[in-house]
Every structure is written in structure tokens, then in C-alpha cells.
Image (cartoon, rainbow, N blue to C red):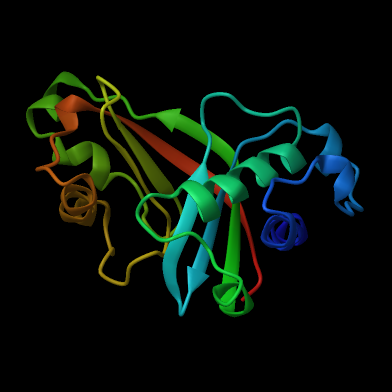
Length: 185
């Protein structure tokens, strides 16, 4: 998977367009035949600089999904400048292949103390996606992404900072995500 991301980056920087699947060297056939969701994260100087994922309209193969998410990250992630050819020599890559995702449900008692839903998540092992119920805001927190993220309760301040608003669980759909991680570091 990392190889597809690297090839996609190189191809884009040379030709200024996304490659087609058949323009890349892909040795594992399951990457061409399996439909799956993934998350691409690119680090520069050990900081997240570009990231993209797709949870709604999954492409026909992991390879297609990796290509699209890589291009989305390096070109369209509005938090950062586009990836430059100079930065490309110093990047590190992480791919999270989503193995399980579930919407977290709350009991009536938990709804009164909304922190309990997030407290159940292990931030070292799993990650979360929150989507505002009106789809106006969304963010993701990967596992082991912040040394201050020790317990599920720690999500609240990080979510508030990333969402640019006080996080209120009652206004968001919360997904708990389990992944298989591949990286080049």
C-alpha cells in the first residue's frame, strides 16, 4: 500500500495529474480486486501535513482508493500547502486500512453524560471519525497521533480544537474505527 502512495506522489509531481491504476506497478492482486476503505496520512518533519480518507463512496479497489486519497491529501487538503517536489524527499507515509467501523450508540443514561461514549474508546488502538449531524463539520483522530491522548476522555479537548467549536456529542455522529496500519517509518 505504501508503494502505491509513493508511486502516486511521484507520478503526480512529474505529470501533474492522478495516475490511472494501470500506470502504476502493483504486485499484489488483492489491491486490484478488493474494495476497501483506507486513510492516507503523510508526515513532514514528523508532523501530519497531508491526510485524506473516504468513508462514503468507496472505489472499486484498494489501489483506486489509495490513489484518490493520496491526491486528495497532497493537492486538496486545505489545511496545508500542496506537497512540493522539495518536500516529497522528506516525507513519511502511513496507510490505515479500515478493518472495522461502527457507529457508537449510547444508552439514555450515557446521553445525559455524553463523555462516557468517548471514554470507552482506546486511543492507542482505535481512532474516531466525528461527523456533524448536518454534515457541516467533520474530523478524524488517528490512534497514537498525540502523546497527550491517553484515555478516551482526552478526545474532547482535541475534538474541540480540531472542529473549531466546543465539541458536543449530541450534535455529532461518532464512528469508532479499527485499522491495519502500514507505514514506512
